[in-house]
Amino acid sequence: MARDDVAPHFSHPRYWRVWFAIGLMHVTAWLPWRLKLWIGKAIGLLAWRLVKRRRHITETNLRLCFPELDEAAQRKLVRDTFIANGIGIMETATAWCRDPEHLRHRVTFKGQEHMARLKARGQGALIIGVHFSTLDMGGALHSLYFEADAVYRPHDNPLFERFMTRARKRSFGRLIDRRDLRGAVRSIKAGRAVWYSPDQDFGASASVFAPFFGIEAATVKLTAKIARMTGAPVIPMIFHRNPDDRTYTLEYLPPLADFPSGDEMADATRINAFIEGAIRKHPEQYLWLHRRFKTRPQGEAGLY
Image (cartoon, rainbow, N blue to C red; front, side, top):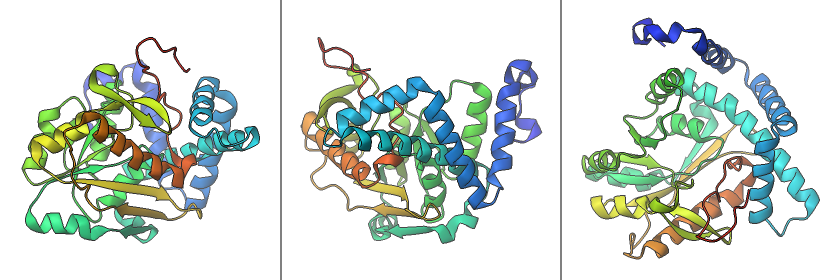
């Protein structure tokens, strides 16, 4: 972070821990890959043992979404989820603090023709992503092939927000606040691709309750709304870490046909079905640590 970009008040002691974290991310980004994996796994295992609140949330989510697994298999999946997310911290540091060009040899990109066709026509698109632990690594590797803007949630800490947005702008053109619908629409109408992950709980007012792993989940209506307002194709995208923990696969699927349909419930269900299918391929890499089923239909008891 350049000196002239740092506000004087960020020198206050209350930001010292944030500065330490930023410095640590810069250091770890340059570590050998094997050492980063080891540290990431250690962080994940430590969190699995000590961060009981997040472990409870993860256990609840996986019990709800994978009832077919026996107790031992669910326990293993919880542990593997923390490990994958620990590695994700190392991947995020690498994506934010280093030039993604040095990672080009680690990614296999499938389905490029779907985006290339739109780019050749100068047409914008809405790219549907998923909140995997590899999210920021995916953004960095995606930037090697195609430009995109991204919808995101600003961080509550102003110093970390500045660091995060500066880092992400190395991978994305514009960062669009998730509340800025007009910003997303303007980007797409200008012929740009916008990366959007609609798999988090933003409350009942912004959502319909659509099935997700067989459970009614508050699912944002914004995906269909943006598609309707722009007339842009919606392209699902899958990104995951391969079993070797050293390489990645990024894949565009064909644009969704007849989307939006005009039926909010049907559209939300369709998006959830894509996200569920992507998760089932590598369930441990999903961000199960967040309360995906926080908002419940009226009169239904909380799940956490």
